[in-house]
Image 1 (tube, helix red, strand yellow):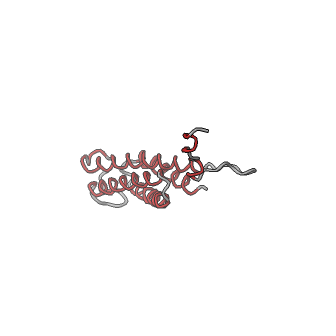
Image 2: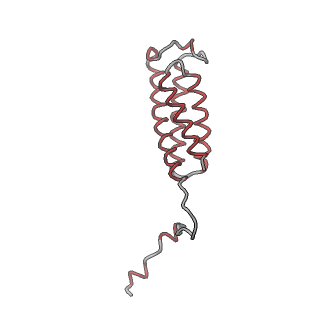
Image 3: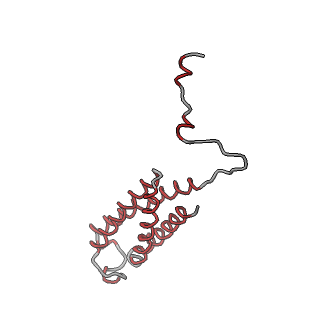
Length: 145
């Protein structure tokens, strides 16, 4: 036995990783959380881009802002989408780090995103429908286990 073997450590034991017990099946919920984190980051990026578009180009959207469910100027919608996009990215980061606060924040912000996109549905219908579907999938992925 050389001196090097004495210096090695069992990194799995130190990290708390143990082999499965007899009859125990590994769970796959961690894969759902990674999926939710990545999807939330993608939604956050697109949400921030929608916010910037609303701030800088009012003519891009299908209907005038007075025809929306919440009749405010597109600059307000732009700030709302931009802030929600940044919070989405923060929640995705925390979720991918395995933080419990990130899981709660991701579920709450995804629910808020669904409501905001329902109100924004007339202005940008295709993206709103896709964003609603992705946010519902994120909520499912976080709460499934």
